Length: 342
Image 1 (cartoon, rainbow, N blue to C red):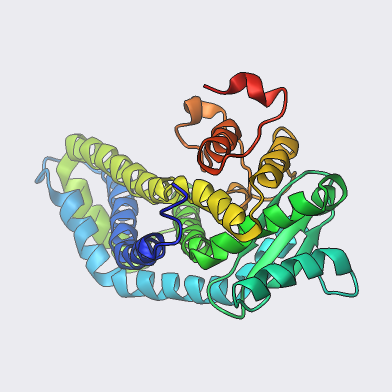
Image 2: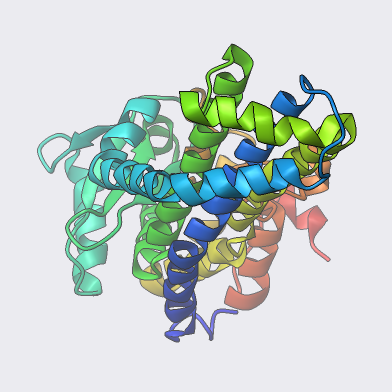
């Protein structure tokens, strides 16, 4: 694991995934939009009578998609542009993080700066969250935007070597382009959540997708009768759930090995696996931060998940990370963690 860290493979892989997200997003967005139109057509058809063609709600939804797709893409593009410009402000608002400089936190800033100098990196913006929880994360899309955030609890609980290891872990996420991939995925899933919520609200309140479209929808979509309506509603719900689920799966499928690689990078930078191990030991069970949404917590150094036996976990269990550091970096595990070794 540690030998592979220095290769460009992981960086290339993250860049490739970022491009796939950019390319695949319009397809998923069109699928979601078609599902919403189809659901609307099915609901309208339930009010009609007669025995028209079974496929009429599907044809009506396809026609409406043909008319609306440019507006959907423009809206999504505006969303992405706004999120791109203000994502850091949005994250800061959700976490309460405040930027600090050398004067505000000299020891912490010097640790970060020295690590960056050792790798020829520009020092990211340093931020602190005022919470007793023990956590940290990095954000940014490109050089000049990168930021490393740590909690106040982390700065008061960890010793100097452990803080250095955590900062090195976050710098590794920046070097590996993990942060850019995560930010893009968070923006995309946010768009799906917004579109789905707006569509649901519109359907509940009876808002039409256009006055002419509603009148035409009643005449065209109602022809299929109750059978076509039920089929359209079932198909629409399936399409909406599948498209949204795919967007979420993309988010969770971003390889959990990024945390192992970031731990490895911390060891490479600091030459101190024991500090990374003891830092993780102190963080374990004390990492929960109240307030930030799940999308932001994905970026944290620790984000414990217990539901569905970890099926949707964004991070590997912290015990496995510690065992990996002991096995591959010859780090020492102190009690009580030593009893968990296999």
